[in-house]
Image (cartoon, rainbow, N blue to C red; front, side):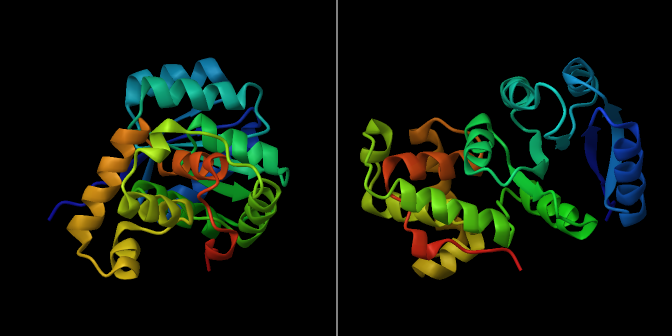
Length: 224
């Protein structure tokens, strides 16, 4: 069997950061750094040329949020990992709404980055304990607010259960185990709710869940 490495673009306006991450991914052996970029224009040019599997984006880079939004529209198959995330809950929510597929905090390690990247490429969302704690605070703040969302209210009871579990960061396999259903059935539920909610990324489920008041703070799970 031929092993195909995932293609990754690294974006940061700090050259040392770009080169350091490139070396780390090269040593890991799972990823091909097909391009690096120092700004939004460079990212979009590389996206058009390389059609990468993932983009590692330094959130300190100018126009980071608009870069995420444009990449999500132009290359929806590309998973965006937000690097050096702020501890501000609003920043995390903004990233989720923009289409981020994974997060690595400012205190995150190379190992955390690779775990987040691996999870995103499997269509899973991995939250660090620090980010999960911030999400708990955000959910608690919104607990009394139930913003109307027609798409969410059109979901079946089972699909609403799946929304909560996806928002917690569970994989399809974990959802199947939690609901005592087959993995293929779990995949079908996730696919159907994505279509109904008109979204492409699992992180968008988290944002919708917060706003619709369907997310239970007690059920958020952390990464190891």
